[in-house]
Each structure stands twice: as C-alpha cells, then as structure tokens.
Amino acid sequence: MKLPSEPGASGCVMSLCLDNGGATTTSNFEEGEVMTDRMRVKFSGQAGYEVDCGHHKKTRVVFGMIDDEKTTVAWYLFTSTADKKSQKECAANDAPASVKFGYRTDIGRTIPHSFEKKIAMNELAQNPKGTYATLNMDSTKTSRMIGYRIDKLKTKAGEVVTFPFGTQQDSQPSRAGEDIEGKVLFLETASFDEKKFHLGPQGKDSQILITGGAT
Image 1 (cartoon, rainbow, N blue to C red):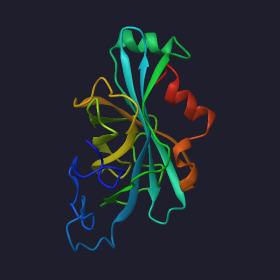
Image 2: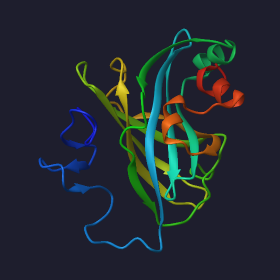
Image 3: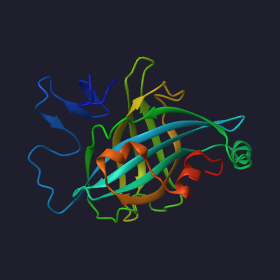
Image 4: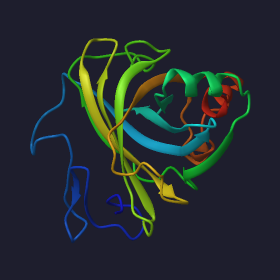
C-alpha cells in the first residue's frame, strides 16, 4: 500500500485519499472548511527501526512536525512498550542491534493536520519524556511505502489527536497491521530545511534515544 502523491502511489491509505486524476485530495479537513482559528502543521516520517533487546524487539519510528510557515521542524519518536524483563534487557544494552525498515531519500509527501487547541512545536506530547499513544503501520512485503498512523496521543493542551504520515520501505516491519502500544517522546526542534529532512534529528541526545536501549 502506498501513500498518495508518493512516486507510483494511488488510492487511499489510512483515510488520506487522492483521486485518479491527481487533482483532488482529502484529509482531516472537511471540504471548504476554513481553519483560521486552528493551528495547522504538516507531518512526515523520517525512519523506522526494529531494535533487538534479546527477548523482545521494540518498534521505533522517527517523524517530524513542520509548522505552517515551514520555518521549524519538531522531531518526535514513537517507541513501543515492552514488559519489565525486556525493558531491563534493553536498558542494559547501550547499543542494541537494530534493523532500519523505513527511510527517506527526500522529504516525500507532507500530510496536513490541524489542532483545535494551539500548542508550541515541542508540545505535541503532553509529557515530552513519553506520552501514551498507539501506532499502526500499513505495509506489505512488496510495498514501496509504509503508511503510519499515530492514535490516542494527548497534547500539552489536553487534545487527543490522531494523524498519519509515511516513509519509504526497505523491508516490511514485523508488526505491520497491529495496533502497537507505546509512547511518543519529543526529541528536538531545528530550523526546517526540506533538503536535509531525510537526515533526521542531529542532536546527540536524540540519537541515543532513537537507537539506544533506554527508551
């Protein structure tokens, strides 16, 4: 299954649709709706990983939230939860083995979203160190793209939100099609540069959270 407007994509993925002529799109917004009093952003995925902690593999997905003016990107990480034994194994390993199943060679399709309650760019997750959410990944073995949906995430303003985004696919994630429980963490904000988006967050602390064992 491919995200609309990605190379070779058509149809609908996770409630985001594009007609066959490529001229009309629909998303969270009702047709003709004016969003003047809402906060508007765009989402795009950057990378997806499976981190091997021994008895458990954790799913981690990095995505960016871009402001409407395209001046700032806020980087976030979804990480799946594990039982206490598996989490202890992860935490004891500073550099667990990881497989990258999702990636970007460019920014790809950015998907618009509007918030009813305004937040700062670093306030997508109510607790920046980890706020409960679920992740679903739409993928097959032959997919060129992976469609993701974050659900049940509460923002700093108390709004519960759901939104989609995508990445290119290197391999099918083992938990595709599942509603994966986990948490969303804030990583960092940076100046938005479309040409560098595929590189992801560059901070040392962010890199530790993405590929380390602690999260």
